[in-house]
Structure formats: C-alpha cells, structure tokens
Length: 235
Ligand SMILES: Cc1cc2nc3c(=O)[nH]c(=O)nc-3n(C[C@H](O)[C@H](O)[C@H](O)COP(=O)(O)OP(=O)(O)OC[C@H]3O[C@@H](n4cnc5c(N)ncnc54)[C@H](O)[C@@H]3O)c2cc1C
Image (cartoon, rainbow, N blue to C red):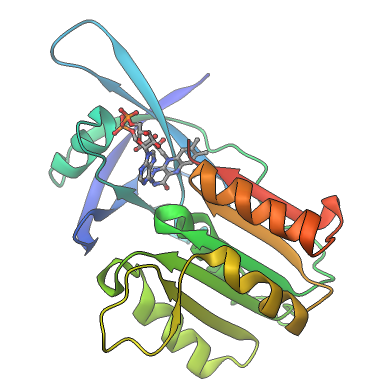
C-alpha cells in the first residue's frame, strides 16, 4: 500500500492521557469523515516496523491537515511514540481507509455512541454535518471515566448551544460529587435515548467490550435492525 510521510504541525493535550496531533500530509489527502489512517513506526530496538490504526478526528478541511486523538496506552509502543513526537517530526502513513462512514443521503436521525478516543471519528462526522443544510438531528452519547476525560467537551457544548439539531449527552462512570449529569456506562442510557429517537441509526466506536455490549442492547433488547447499527472497534 502506498505510504507517504506526514508532518506533525501542532499538538495539545486534550485530557491527562489523550494527545491531539495535527498532521500535514503536504498535498491533498482525500478521506471521508469516519475513516482512519495506518501509521508505521520503526522500533529503535530492532528492525521491526509496527503499524497501528488511528481514526481521523476532524472533517476534511481546505489545508489538507487532519487531527488524531491518541490515548497513551501504558507500555504501548505506538501511542508512546505519538505522545513523544515533536513539531516537525514525520511518520509514515497509508492513505485513509475504512467503512465507518455516513451514507451520502442521510434519511434518519443519528445516535452516536463513543467512549474515550472512540469519539474521534464521531467528531469528524459531526464536523462534516455542520455544513449540511438539511442534516438530521444528532445525539452524541459520550462515555468516559472522569470529567477531565471528556475530550472536545467545550466544542460539543458550544455546538449544542447554537444548533438545536445537536444533543450532547456525556456520561461518567466515575463522577466526582459535583457532577450532575449522566452516570454509568453508555449502554445503560441507550433505552432512553433510542426511545427519544426511535428511527435513529446508531454509530458506535470504542474498545471492543463496549462496542459488543452496546450492539447487544441495541440489537437484542431494543430490536434495532442490523442495517441501522454501525460500529468501529479499536481492539
Ligand atoms: C480502526 C482503528 C482505529 C483506531 N483509532 C484510534 C484512535 O483514534 N485513537 C487511539 O488512541 N487509538 C486508536 N486505535 C487503537 C490503536 O490502533 C492502537 O491499538 C493503540 O494506540 C495502542 O497501540 P500501542 O502500540 O501503543 O499499544 P499496544 O501494545 O498495541 O496496546 C494494545 C492494548 O491497548 C489497548 N488500546 C488500544 N486502543 C486504546 C485506546 N484508544 N484507549 C485505551 N486502550 C486502548 C488495547 O485494548 C490493548 O490492550 C484504533 C484502532 C483501530 C483498529
């Protein structure tokens, strides 16, 4: 598969464990919101080159740059390297790929369900819908442990405040006493949110255990047809 060098243009911490990296591929890098890139990392200790996938966290924009949001996994070689990259460093990337994308014609409300950096492709989709005049209503159910882990919360709150079609529903599994919002795992909120939007298509992204459980609730308990449940697993 064709590879090209992409250059780190800027970076910031989104939460204690998640770094956003904005890469510049230097020329057009076509992708659809929801797709991912495969990055290659040579390990200094050996001849081995490892590849890891990362969902693009931004919609396509005019300057070709794109964002990744990367969780630092303890002893994880690729995430450690991405957290250590300096501005101007390069990494090898394949062209964007993947099928976790929205259909060209959106006929149903969208119920997006993400945990941790699983929110990355959902953020890209949400950004891509901002320029669509007749975009359907979108609910984002975003689950993390602590309040400080709510990536892009300011953005989602601002969007919800200015666009009545967008509803932001964060839930914390380990809330602090001052938290007055939803608590517990995303799965437990699905019956209520689907009841509010029974015709919705679901888009789920995160680690396998959550995706498996959320799919089970939607498909078996709430009898959502298979063609309305889409998912991407990180492990
Ligand atoms: C299609 C796809 C898209 C992905 N997009 C992203 C993304 O946008 N952001 C991102 O951080 N990771 C993403 N991943 C996961 C990523 O590819 C790596 O698995 C992750 O960075 C760990 O790699 P590593 O070499 O650091 O650690 P490894 O030694 O390979 O660690 C593997 C362990 O890390 C855990 N893990 C993997 N991803 C995460 C995560 N996000 N949060 C917590 N634990 C995790 C796995 O459960 C596994 O136990 C994606 C994976 C796939 C398949």
